[in-house]
Amino acid sequence: MKKIIALLLALVMCFALCACGAKEEAAPAPAAPAAPAAPAEEAAPAEEAVEYTEITLQLSHHNAVDQPIHIAFEKWVNLVSERTNGAVTIDIYPAASLYTSGDAQDAIQMGTLDMALLDTSLMSTDVPAYALFSLPFMFDSYEAAAEVVYGEIGQTIDQMMIDNLGVKPLGWTWNGFRNMCTVDPIASVEDCKGYKLRSPGSDIYMDTFNTLGMSPNPISWSEAYTAMQSGVVDGVESGLEAFYTQGFYAMGKNICLSRHMLSIIGPAITVDKWNAMNEATQQVLVETWQECLEEQNAEVINNETGYQEKLVAEGCNITSFENRQELVDLFTPYWSENATAGDYMELLDQTLALIAG
Image (cartoon, rainbow, N blue to C red):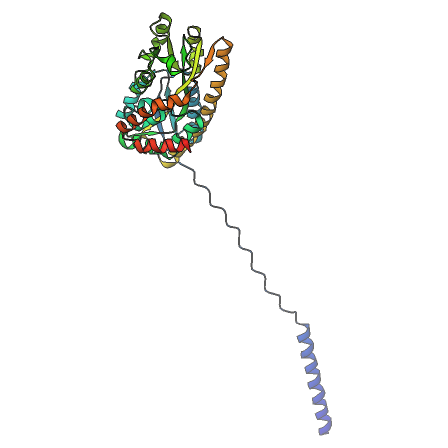
């Protein structure tokens, strides 16, 4: 009996164990842990809007509204307004409607005018080293001039203007080589002896023509045509464009491509007004003028060729100095005297080395 009971108990235990095993197999496998969610992509920080200084500037110049420099200024003004979202306004006063050339030069130094078109040959009165840009027969090409004007030498002289006058140049541009329109042909220094020529009144012009042996007469440009017409002078000096557009060629059929001086001009601003603008605004003014400057330079060079062709078509006789070395030898002492007097002899030596090499 005991054996039967023991057997029954064993059977019961077996069934219990089987049941437990069945339950364990039926249990679902635990789910795999969910992959961590990918982090949301960080949004790029929004660019901060550039703030420009709100300012209105007055720019005075003496050229006519159809002249290349005025057209360049108009483009510049529009670019500045566009790129500063209208924050900067430049009001142009052309044709000496606000100041004459000389008065504008004085006004910008006194701070009564914001901006003016300056001429480096005239600025040499206040910054003697600027005479280096306009020394007679110094440059025989625009490429040679560019190495000086736009290089370290030019930057050094520009800094002199900033330090001594409180006026900052914004970039010089070509106004063209100056030549002669005369009644008689000129092709040598000998041809210049005693010749009556209208000249600007500044020292560097008078010195140039006196050194050539001419008889320069400092008549104002507004009276130059009448002076040549009446025989007070037998010629004028200026750019080819002026000879053609203002009719001088009708009285003097001889055009000497003397290229005796390179006229260099450009806008300048008072340091006080410059410092009143933030860096972003300053950068816009410089960059936009650089664009206009490059176009202006290319146009001036192209115009010289174009106006020479027009003068030839009108029957003009084109000459040039036959012996340039004679001119260099004649003016080398003058260069040195001018540089010594203006305390820029080192800059002159650097310039001569740069041109020669």
